[in-house]
Image 1 (cartoon, rainbow, N blue to C red):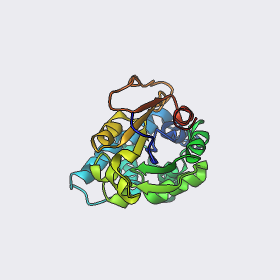
Image 2: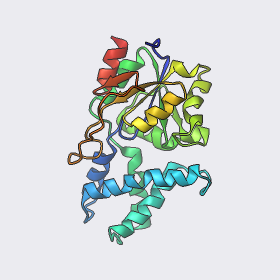
Image 3: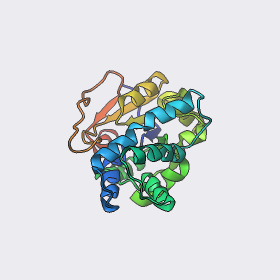
Image 4: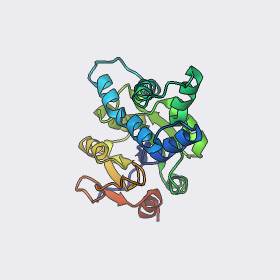
Length: 233
């Protein structure tokens, strides 16, 4: 077993905050005449392809706010939503700044913060992550983003960048995430890893089936409080 990490970097979307539930609730609040769950799913579905266009060089460096808006414009057409004003679209696009934490997130992070340095490592841009932290009372020691490194996960520059910023060896950093591709990439870079189960990330009707333990994870936790219990107590 490796010594405990000095820094724990957290994936955010789905791991710390409930993107699906938050977006579906916003769609309902705005009384948009669409299936709110389908709309949330469609918006998130465009996320990886949009980042892939940046990572491949097809697009120049583009922050997530702008990629989210590109995706939003497309799905508004797909859902035949033609009545939103430009200000309505801007407000809706910023729902990603207002995502709500999972019920265990603030308590678990606060417990971890008592013993470790806790940071974000998200593809979300800095203003998004700062506004989200303010909205959800997330107690980060430092907000790090793909925007800092001008690389999106799973590029190695993101994971190794955390170690570089803190002048640490990769194994002294842990990535905590609900996504195994993220964790596997971090593992290949020498980071410790912790899988956080989020069975309802994609909404109550789509329970995730990939919650089993993996050889490339150092810790496996039901939620962030459980991870804190394993690491702190």
